[in-house]
Image 1 (cartoon, one colour):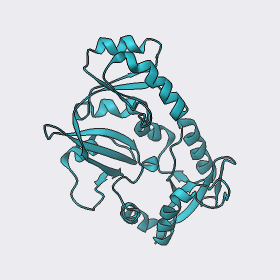
Image 2 (cartoon, one colour):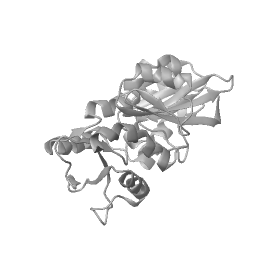
Image 3 (cartoon, helix red, strand yellow):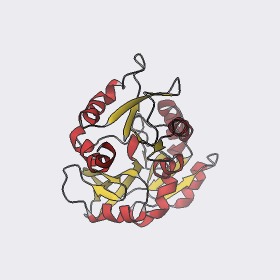
Length: 261
């Protein structure tokens, strides 16, 4: 098993500084580590034939992730997560139908020319707006009280994010308690908690419905104490929110033992 991190911009044979502690922890745990030099489209060092390859780094567009997987395949190694599986977790419209009863009501749009009227037709009292991947955490933020603010928000999203990926997803507002938000990971069907303890029933229900190699599940408690899913993401590009590097590496130990023995 090989873990691949983004290469440092100036030292392309080394992991980016942001991921250096993770790369060291995986290496110390006995994993083989490489870097992905995106500008050169090269894996350094090249994976061994038959190895399973896990990416761990910055978010990629579906096109860039497909290019990464192609390089893995050309080295006769095997990506843990295929390009199709990556997009299945990375883009909200793909996972939402599988758990629509466990998360706020959501409507997605790819035609954006008449979005204000579309929002007004929903009849909601407020909206949480994001593209297929991320919300806007700068400037206006992503929470709208009125549909007529959507054009400004979209302009801000393009300014601060650089693009709108895929389209726009509009989620009905629910009153959450921010301090209760937690991140879990699901690896090959098994859900894990950051502290190694018990996993909430809500996360287990998600794991029973979404069958992907590796993804994150964020849950949060509503004001009425009902737990809700707020986000699913590809685990390879999910931050370690609430996790230590050591607890994250621990996820992979049992999976890697056969390959390393």
